[in-house]
Amino acid sequence: MFGALVFGALERDFEVQQRHLAVKAKADFLKNRSNMTKEDVRRFVQMMTSLILSGIPPTGNRTTVFFWTFTNSFITCIITLSTIGYGTIFPKTSGGQMFCIVFATIGIPLTIMLFKYIFILVYLPFEKFGIYLQHKGLNEVNFLSPSTQSHTYIW
Image (cartoon, rainbow, N blue to C red; front, side, top):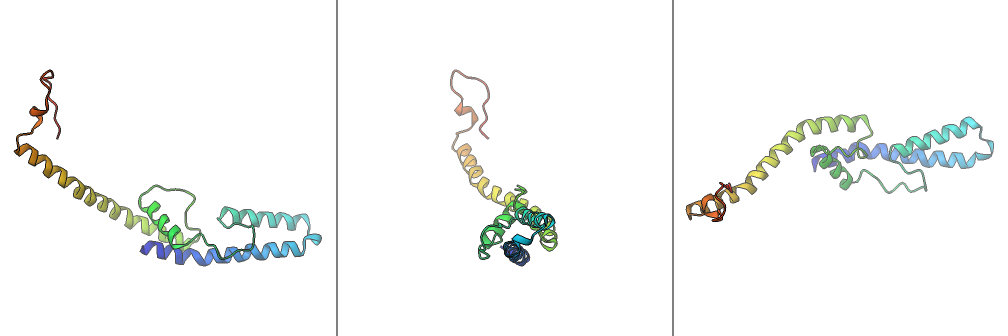
């Protein structure tokens, strides 16, 4: 949760700035569309393309729907810590990218340790149940069918 809050704080301002830039560029384009040169159109298309590639939709003038919500930031943390590496969700700012590197460097080993302890917690009841069955006389030999004399081990 800490990582999601930090990602949201680091990336939200950049996203707001980019959205305002898109709205302003579109308004300027529509206001001056009759006097535009080919170079102006090329720059406008280049700016809109870079906004699209950075995840900012250039359609409409809605600036209230953000990508870096807590939910998306949390998903980014899960993707980073689980080393899935789903490539479309990543921080765009240098501060966000640096935090992502530090977060992954510290968080991935901690996540591996957490998975190890979860595995132990899940495995222990089954191991105890196997020991209980062995004490009751249900071992690998009792599970052999009479027609098969090969050794079949359960644990």
